[in-house]
Length: 193
Length: 177
Image 1 (cartoon, each protein chain N blue to C red):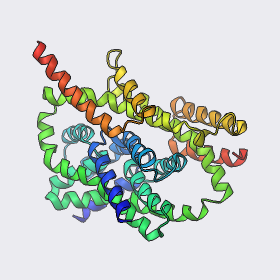
Image 2 (image 1 turned 90 degrees about the vertical axis):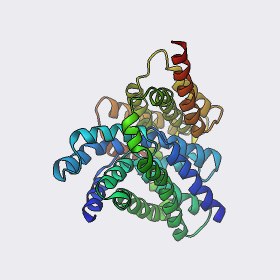
Image 3 (image 1 turned 30 degrees about the vertical axis):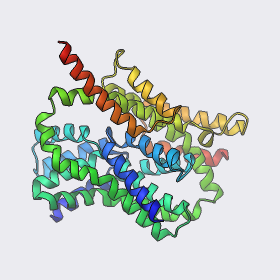
């Protein structure tokens, strides 16, 4: 238990410290640590957490940290109040680096934002963060979220259709994420996915 | 102090869908209503908050809180921004725990999962535009994505390596000139 809480804290501290590029890019890190490295939850569970984080108030990074903290403890078989402690630790840990950094270096950054050394660091960072996000979506395209042709062809084809609908709905018709999530959830019930 | 908390609590509560959706609301509250910072200051602040690691909205709230009331202000603002998330998510997590085995909930989430993947894929293109991806550096996101996706490299390592490589590249180019 103590080990799990310590790992949770340390993981989210690192994510807060190296989480460049905002909430969506952070999701890639959370996924990497929480699903791939520590196996605190399955990819499907993580996807559900992302869905809830996108459709509830607040920044996605905070929402997912809170939810992951709870789920990691709940999955390990602890009572809900331990889950609440996990939530608190994960949220606190992900914000802590911001706190330290903003108080220490924000003034420095404000002044040296256009300094060549800072600019060269970001010339490498910015494109890599795009890669992080791409990796997050590629990793989520697995059989747990989409099923597969051999496992369940019906669910697989419908999943692909829903994926296309959500993509086009947001890109072309500019539907909001909550509307898309709700519509797709209802479609899941109606179609018996 | 309570004003700071209340303002950022509202900002945290009324933004759904992540940090950048918050910018208009932050501007309205902090610049127009309270006049805590000027519009130009806020623009600078947004640029710095974007280049700092961490959660965008939290970074902004800490900065403005500190400017108003020092360390205490920063703490209060950060708590204000995080609290709505914390309460909403915990309420959902506690309720969802009981309904996870429910067959309707299962269908609902099976419908949602492919949509979530699409919703995460879209910002890739949006960010590629703002990160100024061109033909000469398009290999960076592709290689980093491949390393994470197929070889299981940690994204944290990629971020570190990319920052160091960018710095080294900049220094090398300068010494060439």
